[in-house]
Image: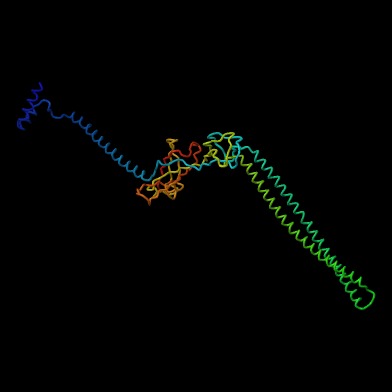
Length: 386
C-alpha cells in the first residue's frame, strides 16, 4: 500500500461514526486481545520501572541527607587561605669589627646552638687583652704599695706620741726647776744666780716647744694615715677599673667567634672570607626549628573561635598530608592597626572593610619529618569550632 492510499484510509476512518470505528478496529488483524504470554512479559517491565523509581527516590533521599550532614559539619569549621608558616628568625650579626678569618657553615646548613659560624681575626683583640692585663697588674701593684704605707704611717704616729710623752716630761721637769730657782732667788740668797734662772727659763721654753712640735708631728702622722687610706681606696678603684677593662677585652676577644644562639638552619648567607665586618652588619639568618602558622581570619569569623580549638593544617608543599594543631593565641587587634601607616578612619571618606586578625596556630607535634617547613610557605588551616 502506498503512502497516499494509507493517508486516505486514515482520513476515511476518522470521518466514520465512533461505533463503526470500533467495529472496524475490532476486525483488524493486528488488534488482537492480549494473551497470557504477553501479560507475563509486561509484569517484569513494570517491576523494573518501580525498582528504578525506588532507586531514584533513595538516591535523592541520600543526597538530601548527605548534603544536610555535610552542611552541618561544614558549619563547624572556619578556614582561610591567607595563612603562612611563621617563626622568629634570628639575624646573625657581629658585635665587634674585624676581618673575616673563616666561614664555617654553608647555605641552608642545619646547625646547633653554640656551633661556630664565623671567625673574625682575633689579633687586635688579643693585643688589647694583653694590654688590659698589664694595666691590671700595675693597678694591683699600686694598691699593694698604698696598703703598705698604712703600717709605716701607723708607726710614725706611735713614734710621735712617744715623743710627746718625752717632751711633756722634759717640759714639766724644766718648769719645776725654773720655779724652784725663782723661789730661791726671791729668798735673797746667793745660791742661785741670775744666769741659772735664765738657763732654766730657756730650758723650759725649749721643752715646751719640743712638746708642741711632737704634738704637731703626731697630728701630721695621723693625717698621713688618712691620706694613705684614701690612696688605698683610689688604688682599689683603679684595680676594679682595670679588671673591668680585662673583662671587656676578654668579651671582645670572645666575640670574634660568632656562634649560633639556637638550633636551626642557615638562610640568606652573605658573608665570605676576607670581608671586613662592621658592628651590627647582617651576615646570615638563622631559621629556628620551632615554627607555627599565622592565619589572618576575617573579624566576622572570630566570634566563636576559642583558644585550644583543634586545627587541620594543609601545607601546599605537602599535598594530601594533614598536620594537626590548635589555636594558641589571637592578636588583640587587626593587622592594619599595627602596620607602619595605620588607617585614620576619622579623616576623609570612610569605607567599611572587613578587617583581618592574625591568629597563631601551633603544631601539636613538631614536624621533624617535614623539615622543609619554613617561614612564608602557604598554608590553609581549618579550625573546628567547638
